[in-house]
Image (tube, one colour):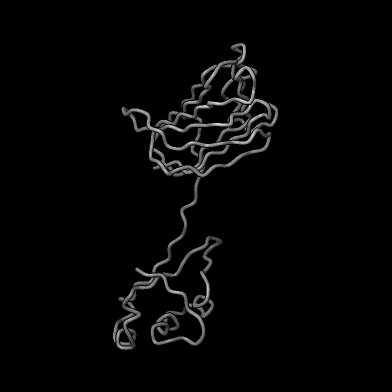
Length: 208
């Protein structure tokens, strides 16, 4: 089905829209439906001439609305999380749970060493599309590698990210991938001893 943009006086191909009660503003720009951007798509039959427009019943007019699918947070209480290390093994103060508690005062703080990582095992299959992460400046990673797989399969590389050494929340669009397990590896810490500090970690996409 093709996408058509209308302007000016309605043509024979546009008349069925008038008869269906679609406002003339829809001829000139994308429509808005319940706050979500949608595009009006019409069947190519409407472009063949007046005989198709007037000779076909309304039930045969293929008019559909296509809206962008919203993303949602995928990490939940049932998501199993593992990390490479915790500073001084003090999980109460610096444990992995603090990446998901939405607090600005708590964080996951790794111990020293190269290539710190986080592994997420989702309770059901998901399609990821975004990664949100907030480091502590001076303890961030200049290179992050994302790997994922379905249950029973081997990890495969999905995306390579290059975060800034900053305290700000950073948001990345990643290649859409269906998986059950996600591994995030921090390969180049800005800390001399290789420590990583993460205040917030979010994975967004679609639950399948």
